[in-house]
Image 1 (cartoon, rainbow, N blue to C red):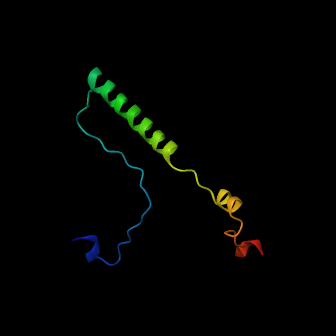
Image 2: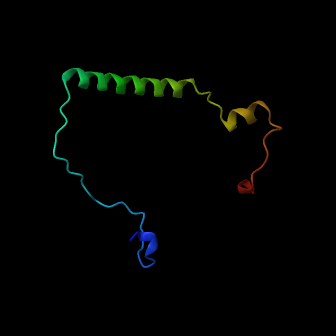
Image 3: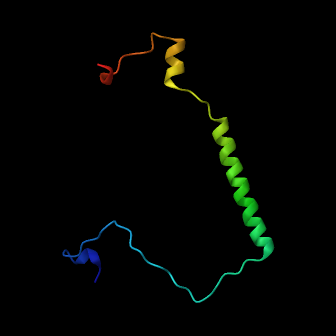
Length: 77
C-alpha cells in the first residue's frame, strides 16, 4: 500500500534527524582535493564579482534626484 491509499496517515513537513550509512568510504586524491578547493574558490569569486557588478539603486537616491517621484506611503500617515 502507498500512503495516499491510506487516509489516516499524516505526512509532516518537519525534518527528521536521520543518518545515511554506506559500506564504503570515498577517498579523494590530493589532486582531486586541490581541484575541488580551486573550484570552490572560483565559484565564490564569481559570486562576489556578480554582487559588485549589480547596480546599487535605492529608493532614496531616486527621490533625492526627482522629488516629484516621492509619494507618501500609507505607513507615513
